Length: 304
Image 1: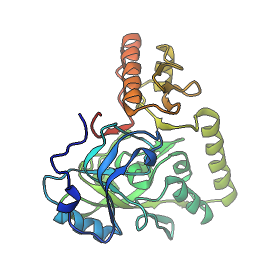
Image 2: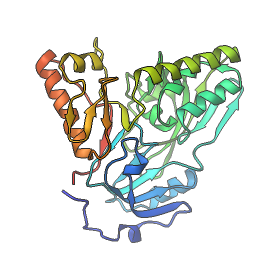
Image 3: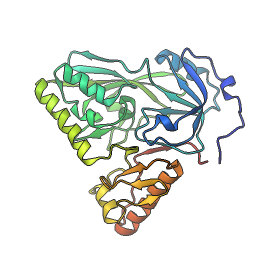
Image 4: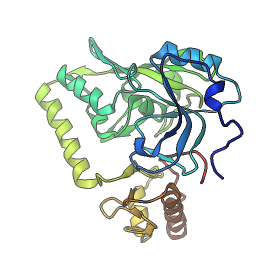
């Protein structure tokens, strides 16, 4: 099934924002896997007001999908119908207010950790180990190296599909492991994070330790990061390894030899190759251990 052509000129039906609209925008190069089809229309809003007014005026039949930095994402080869929203300039500012860090949703998790370090604020070092943006981390309660968003989030702002702006406390987001109960149509635009005064050297040392641990244990090639959620009482990589999947290949997609919970694009893998490999891993793990792995990587769009 290829990209729908029922609206060959979708861009002509859309409201005119202050930000950028691009038709048939390639998405593969914007993801860490470096593969996948185009967005029917890509929208980069100028700021929160631009995003809200655009969504408020958007025809109700047009689907909206949010793209972060493309780290934990697989775009299927047929591309993504409707409008894909990417928060870039206008959503990357990071400010320190007392012992709190206020970040735009488009800011890299790493940059938030480094800003906190530069202001001698501790407790956000774990963010340096999450390869994504703050908006994505809030939506899925991102975590790594002993920390997660639920522990540090004070409040967040989001815009829904109708263009309404929401300001919510962390307690309202129903956080659990790699999950929040935020409505699916919310696009997070900013977050306020709690930190504590700390020793700059100790903070810098912890960030360096996390970077070293990631370099040692994870591939730095074309990968979408952690592929499957760790099931209760298990480590996904161990289940995958025991099921004999280390190094398993489908086309140019491979289970990493270095870390079994990472899938790699060896060069020319299609999204279909990567997804088929993931499903084969799930099948083998279920047959071997009786555990059903759940995808952590978000898969969007339609098959080619």
